[in-house]
Length: 170
Image 1 (cartoon, one colour):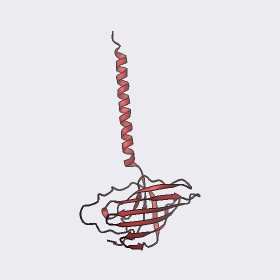
Image 2 (image 1 turned 120 degrees about the horizontal axis):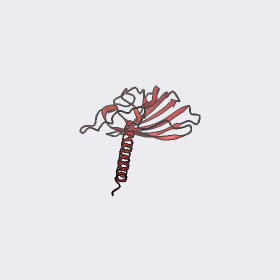
Image 3 (image 1 turned 60 degrees about the horizontal axis):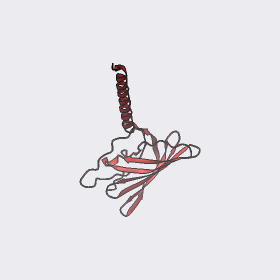
Image 4 (image 1 turned 30 degrees about the horizontal axis):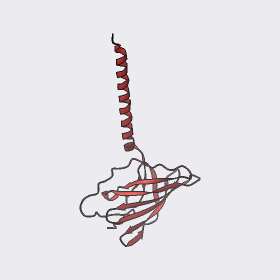
């Protein structure tokens, strides 16, 4: 006589394991999409936001990579740099480099008070053979955010680029 209960038991365990593995896979895929990021806003150009995808404020006396993008100008402008929290935990300092098609590079320096996330900054714009400085700012805010969609770079002429100061540079 066949033992039917043990065959069903093995099948039930296999189905439960398959469902569990599928659920775990869905969580792992969905996690990056819902991960919080860190946005620095308050630049004179209202579309200029420095977005660190998945970035969280480092612990006291620690530094972390800040990688992401800037959605200004409706083009894909990659961004990278580093953020460091002071040893006493009262300040987050960041140096970030943003680039755009056509030889545009902007280096943003940001200093935010913690835990408020408010502070100041400035920038240097490097393009072709020129270098200009942005107006020093005291209106910057850093906070957790849900990042916007990263734009696709359009095909055709290089778009007009506005820097963090809101000035047309190309």
